Amino acid sequence: MACDEPFRAFFPLGLLAGICGVMLWPLFFAGIDPIYPGTTHARLMIEGFLGAFVLGFLGTAGPRLIGTPHFTAGELSSLLALYGATVVAHITARYWLGDTLFLALLVVHAGFMGWRFVKREDLPPPGFVLVGLGFLGAIMGAGCVAVSEIAGNHGVMLPKVMTGGGILLNQVWVLFLILGVGSFLLPKFLQIKGRAEFAESRTPPPGWAKHAVFAGVVGLVITALFMLDLVVDAPSLTALGRFISAAAFLFSQIPLHRTTAPRLTITRWLHVSMVLTLLGLLLPVVWPLQHVADLHVIFIGGFSLIALTVATRVVLGHSGFGGLFSMPLPFLAGAALLLSGSMVLRFSADFVIPMRSGWISVAAYCWMAGAVLWGWWVLPGVRIAESGG
Image 1 (cartoon, rainbow, N blue to C red):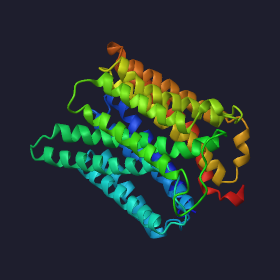
Image 2: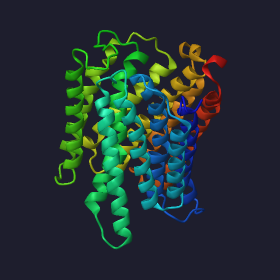
Image 3: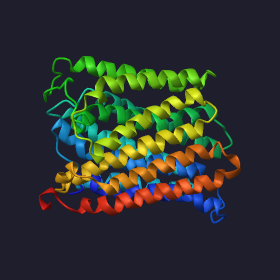
Image 4: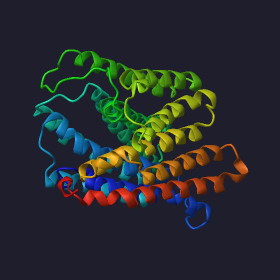
């Protein structure tokens, strides 16, 4: 089951990695863990939590979209081994090793999918150009970060290489995946009418190339604006450019005002998560000096909430409980509200310095409570085949 649908293995592991990454803050502020958890937290949330949800989703949906066989047992085992080793390396603060292993994980996964793309029966949606650019950015980013860590261990500092690599890995990768995959899936989830649809074909159907070029141009522009921050001190201006580019692509592909889906739990929180992603891109225009606070709006309200909401539909749909889509899902609403509270507290913490540690700890507890609530109700479905519903 996991070979055919890798989310069954990756989603539980990713949730566990995320809880471990968030738990570090209360442990640190309580004096239990004396090591400042900034780097470990960031790595576990991007490479551990979000990485698992990305690999699990793409490993499941990718072969289906292009009409190729699913992963073999050997392929899945190699991915899981590299993933587990990555998480363990970061938990033990061997960052250079964790980043190197994650680089290997991305390259191996890209190789498996690249071989399938060559053997494809169908083309992926044009927005998946952004998925490819995102993975390329993540590979480059992980490589830059790993090289910087190794050089730093030998007394050679590469601050711009480290910063640039971190931007590609922590921001560009997941943002492009959301825009690329979202341009295909979200209109289906939200039942948006009146947008271009492309028939399954091995060769580009009419209009496919135009949409693919548009996605590629948007991706290159956003990447250039991120990299411009390394050489130009104009954070508000570059942030505004990124917001406009992402919003233009998003609303051209996902015109939310034409949604015909009923206001159900999944569709409602998909709307909220996309709005919060855009808000997180816009906030640096207003508060460019609160970079970390602004990022947590994207990471928690955008990336985390989208991951859990889409994963809810994936797990329910593949375990025979698709009928629940049209019903209220209080567990998802509760988890989403807890994540939203975590986002507000973590963002506000950087504006109330005397109470910062307490607010971050409470934000961490809210995130973990939301994750546990979601996992308790959703993750049992990973053990159920669709025919078993």
